[in-house]
Length: 300
Image (spheres, rainbow, N blue to C red):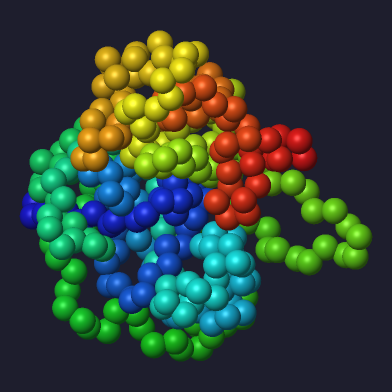
């Protein structure tokens, strides 16, 4: 086996991919890559999952961008800027597999989209995934600029007028969005499917309520090494995470980094560990798309 390929994706998008919510990864160019690839959380030095690329669709226009928000999860407030910057080509994902233990790798200088990973990385990932491991890893660098997606023929034109077929998508197809009638209330979004961010000083952490209770912080999130000098109610929890290798030194000496996902007993405990000081989680964790706090969602 030659080098396998890893795709670099930033937050909050990679967490949405790992959760199975985001099945279209919006890119500036088309791709001929198909099959399983590794998923790399940007800036973390970690491989956090595996996904299959099954298709590459033609560039979306304004109306299509809005209509397919359930697939790409770029909020309306950011769609115009995304299109102007060229992020209009959907790479279609399916069969996402999140790694319980993210796998570290050495990031090459200058890599901003793809990373060619050593075969030993594939072995490590495959051992962790077991029966769900890919049997046909995508290998080698992407081919030079060749026709990457077929020109839009009659079938594609039909596809662009209709909702995408679900036969190639492993996740359930969301119901298409419709405008509510006047004065009708929209059902609140469940906080367990929303990605929240907390940014105390230099740190940046992403998390969400855990389905079994508590609050899960994503691998690759960072936490302050030295925060408030006051009494810290979550100090014992923080020390335990350092001893057990969950909080590890970051490349920035002022920060720790989460080496894997971790479920805290509450959002306040998570925020306190990340800030290194007492914190009220429901008021501090915010939906980056809307600015609403976790408290707002819980009250809805």
